[in-house]
Structure formats: structure tokens, C-alpha cells
Length: 461
Image (cartoon, rainbow, N blue to C red; front, side):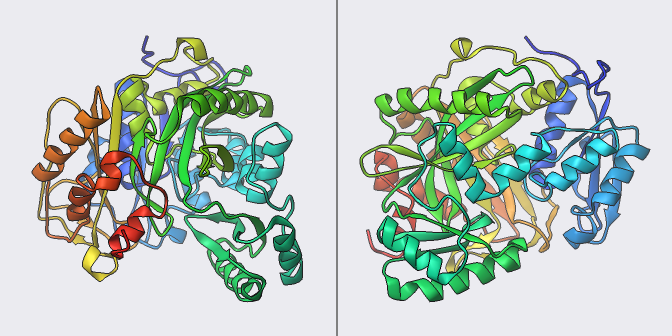
């Protein structure tokens, strides 16, 4: 059953919401708003103001200069737009302010519903060390490591000896691989600690670090969850995100080809139970690492919609953005865990404007020609059309190409055809790499881990 409108906190309709983001994620949210009959106000910077995706919005406001701090990260400007345009809710998308607890608090103070979890959950899960501690206390298997942030280099050295090398130093407020260093022996601790702390301070204004056991050759598997205000929580299966380069996801698929049925049956109920008992609300993703024995360990939680949510949608028939709106509007989840089912297989390829021949250097510019395949089992998530520009100020995403089919082998065959038929001209892209991945033995066999892609590109496999 589909609802045409969502209810706000007072039992009225979300007649209008603000999308506090840009590009592909904004276009994705706009699509669901249109299907639900919810008006959407889009914002843009001066660098984005002529982009075609803005045409789908009911209203558009330019926030300011291209620099994100003066536009997409300007909380005062965003709230002023939301209130002045009669919005009752704000969808933060992913990136920018999506996991910013201050933004969520400011929205509430302005009488706006923040379409996401509570400020407390944003804050607690954003602190990776506290998140590990919290999840461990709730019964989630957590990678062995420190419970609290490290006081200094000497504390790091002591804890590393206790846990056993190799270990991983990680930023408390980190993400995307920043503020992270592998340490294989005591002589490497001081330099790694200094570098990781400095990088974390620069990227997140927080130089605190924690330490965990390094799981080598692991697989990155994440579990999609959603919960409502009534204590109902459920998982929507897992996604495999191990095709990575420099800790950045390149290809994702669902379900995971590497997760055993026994481990899937063990861990998924634990995840949904922990989410329910934590009082969490709205969508989230529990990111886990699978060790060589096939066991899953909690790494961190992303308290927002994920870029790769599309593969979950394709094998479940669920519109996660619509479910976000319903939960934010105080509706109960539309189904129970026992009613939920998935079928088939989906694979997502992130097409970016970057040059693989120059260490994947971003390649902003005007897209002179853009052509995507159409047909059964092919989904394209993009905000661009031929003639649009990819500005140098933000990420270099061109599109996500998602294929689905009854089996993984059929999805791979569909992917090869779809990637071959995709045309992007005017900027360099990683499209050629994706075509190679679709025929790469390690990927087609499903026998890969988080280091496999980099080793393959370096000629090591």
C-alpha cells in the first residue's frame, strides 16, 4: 500500500519539505516527493543554479557562493529558507549536514521535523568510540579494541600491545578513511598516531583517536535498518561493499555473495533487536566487517540514508525515502519483519568524473553527451543531463548504474551490457574501470575483500 501524503508531528500533512542537499541525492528525494504528492523546496549554490535537476522542484532558492560553508553547510540560511517557504520538515540527504546533531537540534527549535534520527543518536553514533561502546553493551559483536578515546601516543602503544598487532588507529569522528592508519609493530605507533590525529583534526575538527584490531582480508558488509517511534525496528537485509579504493566504495551489491546463510541468520536478528532497544528512529546502516572465519563484527553506524541504498530497494521493492518520510511523520512501519522479503540480486556501479590514468584525479567540467541504457532491470540514479556541468567544488558523481535480475549471474550479464551501452562524453570517468570489474575474475566469482581491487589495480593479483 502506498500513501499519497505523509503526516507531520501535529497530525497534519507534510505538504512541503526542504531538501538540504544537492545533486544526485537531491534528485533522488525529489523523485519520491513527486510520487507522494509532497511539495519540495530545493536549494542550490551559485555553482549549481543552472543545473537541470532543479527543474523538478516546486521552488528553488540559491543559498550563496559555491563554497559549501557559505551555502550547503550554512545552517542559518537553510533554516531561513525552510521557514520562509512554509516547509514543515527538512530532509538532509547524505553528506553535508546529514549527520550533524546541531542541525537537527536547530531544526527542532525552528519547529521543523528533521527527517532522520534524534540529535542524541546522531551525536552518539557520530562518536565512533562511543558507538562501539554503546553497541557492545547492547549485545552487538564489536571488533576488539579500546572502549574510550586514547589519551596519547603512550596509551596507544600500551593498548596495541594488549590487543595484539596489527592494529588500526581510527578517528573518533572519522569517515571515508580519513584519520586512519595501520600499525604493525610498536615502532610505527608514534608516527601513525601523529599523522592520524592531525588528519582527523583537519578533516573533522577532532583529533581524538581510538584503536581496534586490524582484520586483514576482511569484507565490508552493511545492514540496512529502519525504526519508528513506537519501538518497532527491522532490518532490510545486507549489502556487500568490499569493492573499494582507498576506503571509498566503488561497487556495491545485495545480497552479499560472501555471507553464509548461517551467519546471515545469526546476525540480522541481532542487529534489528539492538536497534529496537537503542530507541533509534528512522533509517540507518550498521556497518560491519567480516573476518576470515566468516564472522561479522560491528564497525560503526551511519545515521542517514546511504548512497548505495538503491540496491536494497531493487531487491525488496521498498522506497526507503518514502519510509523515511512516513517514520518522520510519526507513522508506524508499514510492515513487520516477518512480512518483509527480498528476491533476486542487484549491483550498483558508481560512475564518477575522474581519471583512472592520473590516480583517479577528479575531472570536473561540462558533460557534452550523456546516454544511459534503458530496459528491464536497469535503474539510473543521476542528476545530470547532456550539457550540465560538474563543478569542482563538490563530489564528482555522474550517476549510479544499478542492475537487478533473478540471479547474480544474470545481474552480472545485464551489467556488462548496460555498462557497454553507457556513454559519457566531455569529462573523463571511471566507466572503463567498471567495465573491467564486471569481467574481473575475483568479482564475478564473489571471492573478493576490501583490498582486492587495489591489489588488482596495482598488478598484485
